[in-house]
Image 1 (cartoon, rainbow, N blue to C red):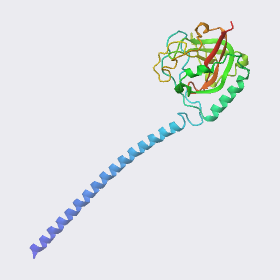
Image 2 (image 1 turned 90 degrees about the horizontal axis):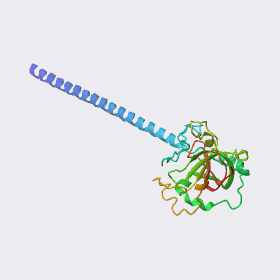
Image 3 (image 1 turned 135 degrees about the vertical axis):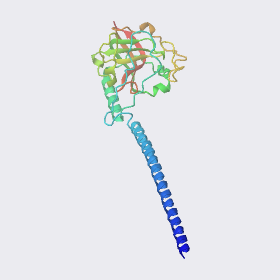
Image 4 (image 1 turned 180 degrees about the vertical axis):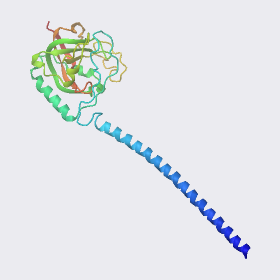
Amino acid sequence: MLLKKNSSNAIVSVIVLLLISSLLLVALSNNDLIIILAVAKKKSSTTSSHHIITKSNKSTGGFAEGQPFGREPPTPLATSNNNSSTGSSRSSIPLPPKNIIVATTQRMAAASVNATPPRQTCLPELDRFIKPLKEKRFIVVKQCVTITGTVVWTHYFNDDGDANFNVALDTPYKNMLAPGNYDVKYVPHNKPAIAALHIETVCQGPVISNSPENVVACSGYDGPDFRSVLPNIGQHVMVTGRYLVEFPEVVGGLAELHPVYAIKIIH
């Protein structure tokens, strides 16, 4: 009888040990599951947060809400008055909100009322030497205008073949600038910024740029050779060209005559 009782006790003990072992295994398994779930949740949270940030930057054009002209980029224009190449890279500033674009272009159009070109100076056929990839950066305000002013910066020639200069406008035209034109600096000696209209005379030099927006852009060029009348700093000039604004160039947009149709040195 005692042997039978001891045997029963042994069986019970084994069962208890088996139950305890099973409970321990379940506990360990649950802990591992908790850890795995916690890690997965952390990874999911990190990925989701990154996605939200990326989406936010894309939707606001990289600007903080309420800041249409956010970060200040490097000025992509005047860095020297010599004839060295400016390189093939271009800045690309995100577009401001549509209402800013509309307001800027409407104001520019109204300001150009006095910029009536003389007869037979408009050459819209030169526009075809600007490739569509570059053309999409522009918003044309008026097909043809004429301005006068004093040259404050030159760069002959760019690697895209253009001859560029900036003109501080005479009084009748001084309001034809976009916000970005007030930040364009020129040298020598790191002089202060001068508000000036940017002028681009296409296909006046060799095209050495490998950028898709420039390669073969001047192939078959049969327009005017302006090299003999490209002005020097300080000269008073009359310039006719297509009047546009390029928002991806500088913050606030850059008002330009691009391409130029006619240049006259006044004195």
